[in-house]
Amino acid sequence: MKNSVQITQFEKFSPISYLDYKLTSWGRMLCDTENKESYTSNYAVIYRNENIDEIIKETEEYYDSRNIVPKIFNRCGSVELDILKPYFIKHGYAIREFDMEFMALDANSIKNKIAEKPEIRIISNALEGQEYSLATEQDNGETYGVKLLNKQLASGSKMFFAYDEFKKPVSMALAEKYNNVVYISDVYTTPSQRRKGYGMAVVNNLIQHYDNSLIYLYTDNPDAASSYRKLGFSGESLSSWWAVKGSLPEWCTE
Image (tube, rainbow, N blue to C red):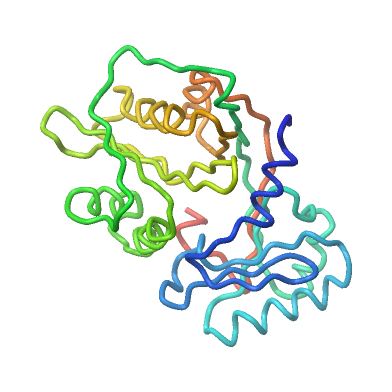
């Protein structure tokens, strides 16, 4: 994909100041000892195909010392699963494989408009009240996700919320910026308000806010991918994976 080099650099080298992390000669390991249940806070990425047994050993020592289940995830530019899978099996890792769309947009090249514009607010402080409730809703009431969001906000990220006619937040997205690259995550709309344009309004507003940036995201939802294309994103299919020491969590196997 065009601009993939910039995105790979973002994923390899962006300073994730809201997490503890260790840079190594082969990749990096991320962790949050205050939020051990968060999968998106605690994982390693392998970028170099050499001495894989030693890499896995180092990964396990790092997470075991923090009482966190060792996990190794696929990210843009990381070593392919076909190479790593024999090592994962050897070391007792369960593997989850899934398809995603890797989508990007150069906001310099497009101006997006939507027919209706609900109220949008940009939040850079810790979430509370109804915004906090919406953020926990996406994780079925669990708080590990919102704990991570609040740390990201404290480090300079921004959240965009759309509100219905009763001034209640119904859709949201997080924007994380490093140099001129913006990564979108946590795009969520409460079920009763889907297919009403709120999600598109949030992402569209985010694009307008970062109109001189390269913006990208991942999605495993075909309907969402179609909506992003309407906003100007281009995409390509990506075979992604997680490797988790022992067994996969129940929510990932349902």
